[in-house]
Length: 457
Ligand SMILES: Cc1cc2nc3c(=O)[nH]c(=O)nc-3n(C[C@H](O)[C@H](O)[C@H](O)COP(=O)(O)OP(=O)(O)OC[C@H]3O[C@@H](n4cnc5c(N)ncnc54)[C@H](O)[C@@H]3O)c2cc1C
Image (cartoon, rainbow, N blue to C red; front, side, top):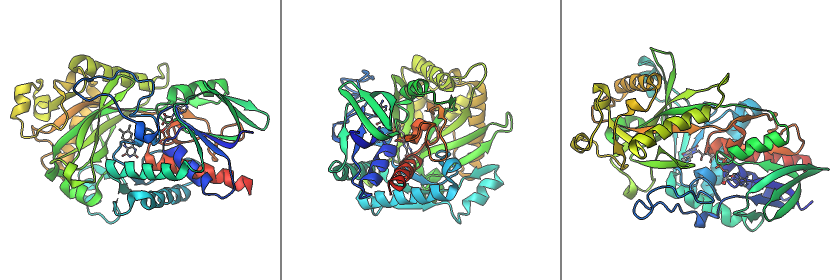
């Protein structure tokens, strides 16, 4: 065999698996194949000036390369089983939390020291939420921030590259089962290994589907989350964000009994465009460095949709809605909450008169022409519910950007060792459909690496 272990994908799942294997002192020969670039070479060409739109690079620097989809993220590591994936259903709740804490220690020792850990334990906000038909989910959140997250990745790479073979810009095309292991096929040649860890994340979802087809690994469709990003003055949410940084709050609508939830809260942050294969959606981030902070807080309000029979393509449904907003607004649309409620579009005049200055240059428009009624009604109900715990949320000038879509990979059939029916072939991270977050994906990498180490003892 060329390698003891080949890891496909250098996102958090692949990186922390490589870290654990490299530190095991077993002399494992490990390679990581990554379709994207090295961290320092990851640059999106969109500069808002000469290049305004996605030009379809061979490898998307936002989603691919060392650090994976999370490389330029806000770096929020949520230590919890309540959201971020269902890893605990495979490995148990205690183990999952233990591994997430272990990943946190690695992050702290690689540049994250001094960053703050927030917690919902003992907060009085839970009671306030309950009194207003809202549920506050339990979590501890390590907020690295976009800047420190990058430093941690830089440090991990400079340590790992001495002990692990990294092959960038080398997408794996196929995996073949060989006697006693696996052969992975790339454009530059093929390589054999005893164990193979697949950690290809969201950007590798189509490829993952092909691999599962070729190797007869069963899959199931997953959900899609659709909604808007809310932006309002940071003071209105400061009692929540100062104590918890990110509060995950769930509301059950009265009209349809759908669940609407807050997602990815960025105190004093900025709203940003996200580009998924040419479709522009909205996201947000914030910096640890006070010099880069704004006067506004943003967060998403999302509703989950899961389709099964006869239509299965939940992601396709989300894509169509995002495409509609791109068609009407040329990209992301922004609307004042007051205009939405009055049934009129926001225009440039109304936006410039607003007390909230948008942090993202988006086209003023009408989200009711884009979002399905059921989803929009749910979002409006939740904004009024949030207004009770954070008065001012339902102000006319609160900005709603749309659409925000969270795509999920299909769920791949893996056992409690995160192993497929093919012995030694593991599928981890977001590519497995089991995790949807930095901490869960990273923990799944450590888990599988430890399984491999134990077998070698
Ligand atoms: C803008 C943004 C902000 C986010 N913010 C947060 C946050 O604050 N907190 C949080 O918990 N989560 C956040 N997330 C989600 C988080 O980034 C993901 O959950 C996490 O990165 C998943 O890790 P992963 O290793 O499973 O996959 P990924 O990070 O997606 O990495 C997979 C890697 O595999 C590579 N790959 C794909 N196919 C192949 C192939 N065939 N051959 C070789 N390589 C391949 C890809 O290029 C990629 O680098 C954010 C995501 C985005 C996009």
